[in-house]
Each structure stands twice: as structure tokens, then as C-alpha cells.
Image (cartoon, rainbow over all chains, first blue to last red; front, side, top):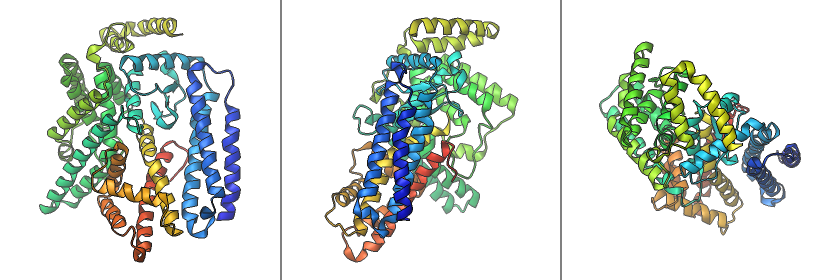
Amino acid sequence: MNLYLTGALEILTEKARMLNAFIPRQLPRDVDLLVDTCKRLSSERIGQIRLLTNNPQMLLPENEPERLREYKRISKEIEVIEKVGITTLNRWQDEDTLLNRIAHQLSIEIKYPLTTPIVASLSKDFYCTYPGLNLLLVPLYESKSLLYLPLLGHEFAHHLLACRNDPLVEPFLIHFCDIVENAMDYVSDGLAKSKQRHEPLLLQLYFESWHRSWFKWASEIICDLFAVFTLGVSFVWSSLHYCLQYGEDPYILISTPTSHPPFGIRIEIMIRGLRLIGLNQDADQIESFWNKYIGVSNYSPSAEYYRCFPGKLIDDIVNKSRDAVDSINCDLIVNCSEDDIRATFNESWKIFWGNSNTYLSWENKQMESLKQKFL
Amino acid sequence: MSDIGTYKTLCEQIKPYAELIDKALVAMKTNQKDSPTLEEFEQLLERILTDKTHNASERVLKLILKSKNINNLNLLSDIKAHFRDTDNIETVVTKTEQIAKMLEEEQNEAFAKIGSWSR
């Protein structure tokens, strides 16, 4: 194994070094941060490889499992740098510059406490984010349209959850931990009671799967609420739009762990979030549309669904998420001014609902005016 | 909205601890009793198990382990209880390896979501 690792680590070092040659040299200043991040991460990986190669203790047979695990970890990290970071730089398009300026403006308006992530329209998985690279990928069409852009707010929040050792962001993470702990305690308690009552084994399997899922579910929910509180109803419409286009049964709960909570509970939480900051009229409109959608689609929640998401737990999550956003001094949507990009996002949904026949021509004009403003 | 954000978030939070635990394992297996890495690992266990941590990332680590299996906290307690016990070094190594593997699984899951590595 050590003979293989010695050769493989040498090849990996050369790959990490050579990747930098794929970074084009005439990129706009907007991506300087991504260039620096990719180069820094490559150098750090090379440093780690040197430790694996030169540290005599690492070469001892009894330490092969640790050496192998570290080798795999470094290999995968280098792949992410290559397939996500460097590829983004290599395929950089002018349209991405507009998206970046919009994202940066949004980050200023909401008083986002981290460096604005770089945004590139290179995603094949809808909106997805890479906190380690400070990079956010969106699909190709996003530089031409406004209706999904509020989802940037949700992705920004993922970066807050990934942040380490920043005292200005840590309170957000602490509130997140409180939410997870509370939810896991609720599930543990439910599981214990279910066992005492000799309830069906399947229900106990559900409880176990919820226990394993809540960490990831809470990540998604706090990111949703961050976007609700800072961007308002436009984020909720964008999320609903996504659910209607691509979503499955919004009340589905399976007995194995999942990364995302059912969309039904996400929308209910978003509605409660809107109400918490006084946007009752917006909440009513969303709720009414959601009920129509559920009626048309003939979806209905199961008994397990209600057991998984009791109202008291949900209220606690909404309140704690609001505290989390307040704790890092982000600006709520209720303070938004009419010149804000988030006001444009909200306006886009008003126009869409007001007269969907004229929406596209309105949107084209808006995109042109954003280009003039930001480019 | 995709899985990637959640999994990459997890990965970013886990990574330093996964590396620390691997270094601690090397120190245990090569009998480096005075290694600063072992000291660091022992202190981390102490903070996590006594809820004395003011570090949010350490709370995240505890929750990740707890969410994978509620008994993982007992596993950490066992490691802590026998940490300096030379008669039980093999038990400590075995249980620390279990934690290391669990964190590796979680990281593998995250990398798999990026789409290139099947599990």
C-alpha cells in the first residue's frame, strides 16, 4: 500500500500544481477571490501531501489506514477544486459578471456578514453552493431572468453555516445548534414514548430516520428562513415556483434519512416566518395559492407527518431562526428601500401575478436596466 | 436548493476534526504520549462531553455524531475515560477509529453529492 501511495501522491502533487495553469489570465476583477481561493487550496493540499510523504510516522505500516484516508480526502478535495473552482474560471462568461454584481448588491443590502460568494451560471443541479470555494453555481438561464434569483439568499445562508472561527457569524451557528438539539430531543422523546406504548416498528423506524435527518433538515430550514427574513415574499414565491416545476409530493416522509425536509413543512415554516415579521398579507396570498395547489394535486399529509412536525416545534424553529438572523445584524426585508435589488425581486413577482402576459417584456427591460446599472 | 450546499457545509465543519482524529490515531499507534495532537484531542473530548464548549463548530461536530447514532456520545465517553490508560490503548484506538470512519462516511457522502464519486 505504501509503495502505491508514494507514487500516487507524487502524481497528485503534480496535478494540484498543474491545475493553476488552467486558470485564464485575463479574467475580470470580480473573480480575483475565486482565483486566489483555488490557488490557496491547491497549495494547502500540496502541503498536506508533503506531510504524508515526508513524515516518517506516516510511513509505518500500522498507520496505513490513516495515510490512506488522508490520501482519499486530499484527492477528492483536489477534484472539487478542479471540477468546480477551476472549471468555473476556465468557462467564465460575461453574463456571470452581471450575476455577481447583483449578488454583491444583495449582500450589501441585507448586511451579509461574509464576503459575497462568487456566482457563476454553470450549474447542472439548479442552485448549489460550495462554501469552501466561496462559490455559488446557478443554471445558465439565470442571468436572463429574475424569478429565481431570490434563491441566492438561501444559498448565502449555507455559507454562514459552514463558517468557522468568526465571532461575528458564530451566533448564527449557535442558534442553529439550538434548533437541531431541540428537534433531536423531541424525536428522541417521541421514540422513547413510541417504544413504551409498543407502537408499530415502522413508526420507530420513522423516528430513527427523523433523528438522523434533523441536522440536514434544520440546515435547509434555517437557510429558508434567513432568505424569508432578509428578502421577503419573493423568496417564498421562487421556492413555490421551484416546487411546482420540479417538486414531488410535498408531504412525503420516508423511513430512511433524507437531506431535505418535505416541501410542505418548508412552505408552512416560510409562511410563519412572513407572519413573524408582519408580512401577513403576503403570507395570506402564499397560503391561499398553496392550498389551491394542494387541492388540485390531491396531496395530503399523513399521520406521521403531523407527528414529525408538531406546531410547537415549528414555532420554536421560526422564532430561533429570527433570533439567529438578528444575532448577526442582518437587515430584514421590512427595512428595504425602493431602490434595492430585493425590491426589484419582489416587484418581479407582483408583475408576474398582476399581468403574466406582459411579464416577459417587463423582465427584459429590467434586465437591461440592471446591466446599465451594474456593468 | 440542491443537496450540495447542505453536504458541503457539513464537510467544511467536519474536516478539521477528521484530520485531528487521524493525527491523534497516528500518535496513539506510535506511542507518542506527549504529542500535542493527543493533548488537543483529549481537550476536545473534554469540552464536547461536558458541554463546556463555547465553540459553535465543536457543537456542530457533537450534533453530527449524535445525529448519526445517539450512542456515539457513549463512544466518545469511553475514549475519554480510557484515554491515558496504557492497558486499554487498543480499545481507545478501536473506538477512535470508529469515529474516524464515521466522519469519513459523512465526508464521502458529501463528495458523492457533487456527482463524481459513487459510494
